[in-house]
Length: 341
Length: 102
Ligand SMILES: [Zn+2]
Ligand SMILES: [Zn+2]
Ligand SMILES: [Zn+2]
Image (cartoon, rainbow over all chains, first blue to last red; front, side, top):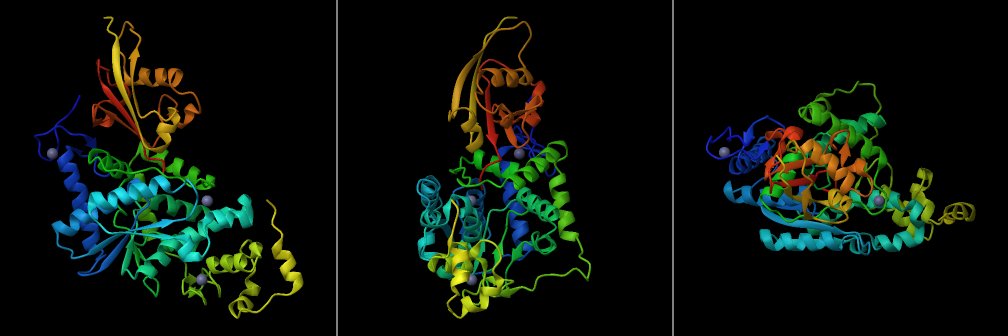
């Protein structure tokens, strides 16, 4: 039976909050959700007056809720931010159409400017053109690397001060677990940070870091926000899928598991003698890279030279020559040319 | 007690809609039975009557797969007794998948 809201004690509760166990009515829930996001923003000092902030907008639930809440808080608390929706068009026929349409509607609904940057502008290649060159078997290497950089490159192109993304608590817990399972200590250390990449690159932040997925979905549902579900048409990551399902199982027994995993990730200390890759920058584009050339630039170089295999596998020895635009030997070229479809 | 239940079922976002052949909502009639229907029985009925492919994406054991939210008359089913909730005629049950896309 419906029970009264534990906050206002007047209206009927519509949800049980996973974080606190409180039963809240719609209005008390909206308020609590927005205020907690405001708390996250102010206590981590995510923004400063007058900044231009790009909101990574995919048309999905998380970024749609993020855009909505930031718009609300920017007005309620006079952040003085210049908010822009920032979308990436990978150039995959039929795939992004619906989600880009959703972002375009969001632009009107929230009255925020929208910039769509295409892979064509960023890399000179659309994803469809890349697939033609490298075959379906190898495209996910490109897909992942290019996507990771696209938002940053788009943000640099548009000269925004900061980019924020809709990553929620469940996403972050999942990433902690994934990095743990992969033994990726460097990423394990970085992945819980609320802001990353302030050196040189454009800072990225996650204002919904402590928001549960359940609350994001219900916020969108009860506010009737317009969003679209997207999934990579190519390969959904099976390993990540297991990690996600495992966390969801834990969460259904004890919702605090999500916060506990994030907490563990945040407070992990790494032994002094654990070797960390040196964080440098790419000699060509300036993006963070532990090699002379970042992965995206190596992949691009391969595409542009007609050697699509260059970016698949390890070819670090060639970086210095690629950087100086020097030709490769015939033997090296031969090895990098053939691609099995 | 022999009431026929007419229910409104809704499915939201990605996965869940695909499971139900792209249907976003539908009205269903549950056959009459001697005792009152509850959500546990409804899930079994959905599994045998509505789910054509890969029911494991929707149901695990006797409940919904973790990550699928259930609303009963626009309220979180966790407030309503979950599987034990006794259905009433013209109830509105909505399933929302949180498992896809950000
Ligand atoms: Zn209330
Ligand atoms: Zn992919
Ligand atoms: Zn680069």
